[in-house]
Length: 158
Image (cartoon, rainbow, N blue to C red; front, side, top):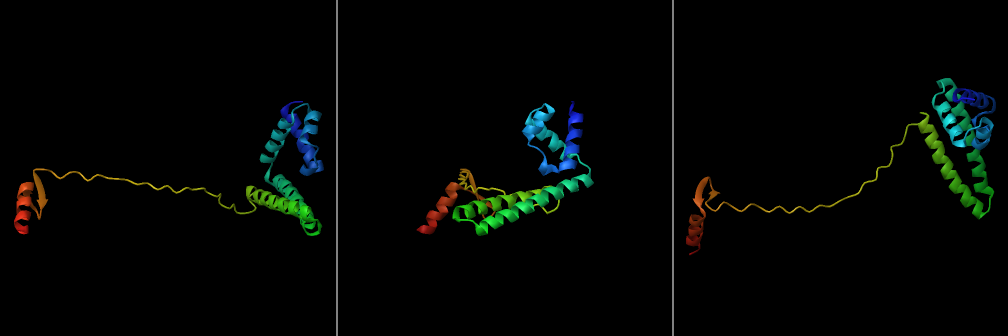
């Protein structure tokens, strides 16, 4: 059986059983004589290339399954012992995150911006002022030699 025939059979199985009721990838791989990785790739290809109407059916199936799981986990979180409640809470959070990703990826919910990690860096830049020209220093729009300036300053001090 070639790739096209295998994918056609997988589409038929998905339509008959629903995506969540399929046998495991390993079982499907054995049935079709390929690896479970190949089955994963085939199903991914099928989902990514489904017509919009069929894509909606698959989405609804996935969404309904997630909602049922969330309700079961919520019940355990309420009725279970401490350890079960803790595990249920962790599972509930993971399911909520998965459900959010599902809604975002299928265009049913606006995507929340990805968190951007930033770091702050401090830089110190030491800039050495250039030495003044020895011949002339600009003072009040006039050029005077350094020696003349020093003489004026000495004269003012005395």
